Length: 103
Image 1 (tube, rainbow, N blue to C red):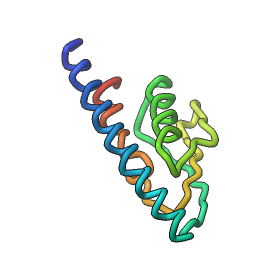
Image 2: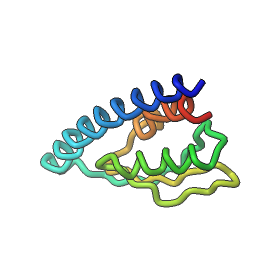
Image 3: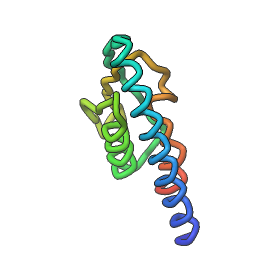
Image 4: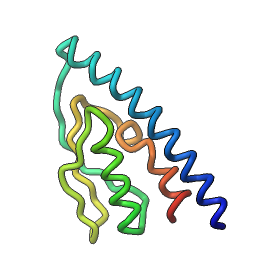
């Protein structure tokens, strides 16, 4: 079990770096084109543990173009601000990796 979680942690880190690089280019392109339409959305991730929610919030904030505004641990609701309207899966692409790693 411990070795499996280490493998999932490495996989999470690699995917996180790739997502950050993709978000840098996407945010730069939106900014240069002037295609900025900020939105605030509420997201209900399928994570149970508070540490999983905290890591998800940090990865959202770490990714350029999005920031976590609020986290309600009791209701498991995240309030996220994004630079452009996006699908929920595009805002939290790392949720399945966090779920495999910590849940």
